[in-house]
Length: 155
Image 1: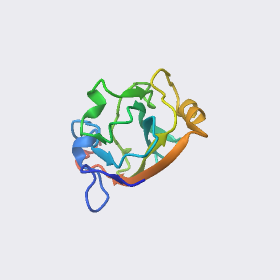
Image 2: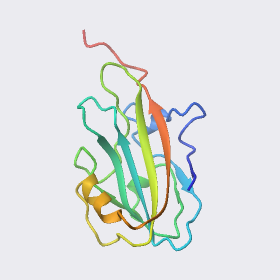
Image 3: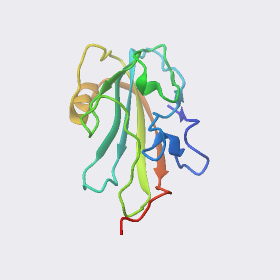
């Protein structure tokens, strides 16, 4: 499954408008339909987060099977169902690397499922992975990066 995004530049860095330095708008995503898919799931994580744990930026726990593109800002739309991110909010939270001004890597996955998760509620990444295990028809991923540009020293 190949995923395409207008929000990720040729150098694999995400546009700042999708981060805490911009409007924190969810990124554009597009993929080809997968035959027999009953729904799609999107998960975006940051393994480089300064707390030492995997930071969950976005869980879209239900995308109807006829939708194979999420326009930028889709996290604010009602046609998708979202799970809880690491900030305990059911929405997208953009990259916002720590004060060391390091480059963080982000992993964005799209899963085509043979089941619908429309009526399920997820409060953790573990819960959604437990639910999709054994139901993945196809998957694809994009790895992208972000480094904060306009960091002002607090000293």
